[in-house]
Length: 132
Image (cartoon, rainbow, N blue to C red; front, side, top):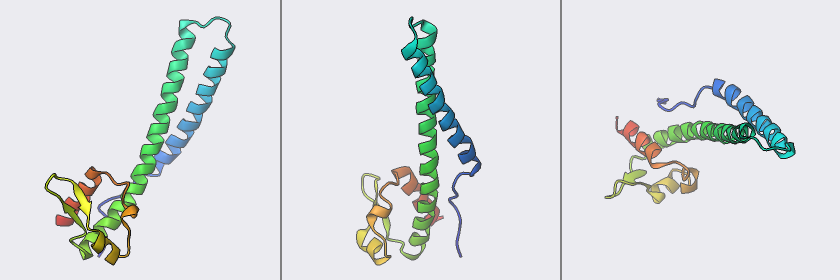
């Protein structure tokens, strides 16, 4: 029995974030060229330049976060399924940090590197879901 506790974000977000990123890149390039070719650097152009770069970095951040959430949902679900068969795979040390039992992970056929990008909050969510 598979329990799908962790689901990736809707693919609708992909159709919003990719065009937003492309528009932000084009807007930033346009503003940069207008700013570079302007004879007089007015305050309005400087504010537009700042807004262009802010929108560029914000859209890149949102796109990277979306990609991480897509990856993390699959990794969290896989780890949850592994914890059902190998309950000692993930443990919490005395400092409250979740660590992998590398022997149990190797016995399950996976390496620590498969889950190394998961942050502590994700590991805590998986551990709590496995105990529920």
